[in-house]
Image (cartoon, rainbow, N blue to C red):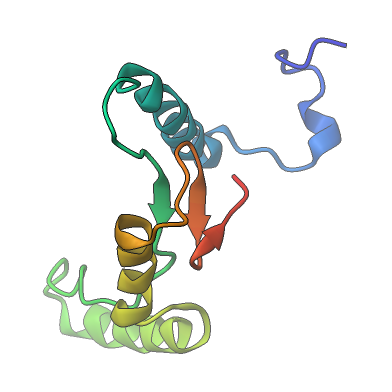
Length: 115
């Protein structure tokens, strides 16, 4: 069996190349950079803050009806599925400051995650 081929992707279920691409690039970068910096005392790790409730897209559309509907939908979604800005920042600060961080790891929710 050739694991690098696309022949077995249907067995994995709904495999989406577009969703996998950022994670694969992040993983490759996180694995390769420590090798480049091998003689320096630098730890390279990836940290994901998750889906954070922020005002990032608040000024995209100026249509009042769309803004009302999108704000209502985003409020509903954000109360159920998002982290606060403080919770998202904790993960990044954990990865930047904690002594238990290991090079070439991916961190989510202040623990080693699975990509």
